[in-house]
Image (cartoon, helix red, strand yellow):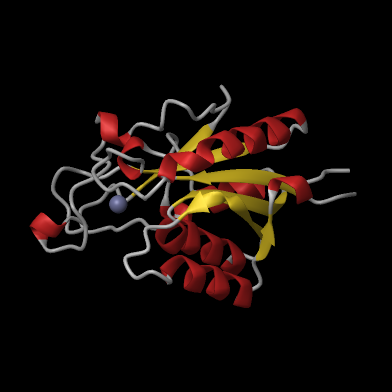
Length: 196
Ligand SMILES: [Zn+2]
């Protein structure tokens, strides 16, 4: 039997796209290919999951309160909503993260769904062995999610055409990808994503 697969879309939220509070350069340029991945996984009856930053107004994650980032993805704001062009399936399960004051929540594996179930438990319940990860941003939440997935014993594919990085330092994304590959993450583009 072939291993059960799942797609994880990391933080494709308005605030991480152009004009957002913490915009990733060209962050919205990956959405059309992510929509193709969503379609492919849905057609094959593989589950699709999405993570989102879902911060309180006051959190040490934000610069104003001693953290690293301008305020972004504050719960229930437009900035925290998924980008309107992202075609999420109706049965999408969303994992919210960074919800507690002082919790950065870089990794989707720190998130919980609306029942309070964490991503890893749900993957286990659904017998998922291989996870395909894309979204924003390569050098932060995508990287943290991929490395956590590896730690959990999953086979991890990074969707190389479905990610964008912040690149505070110009090579940040490249170094993040190198580190992921070193830890066993496999790189994959849409043309190579074939389910038989
Ligand atoms: Zn955040």
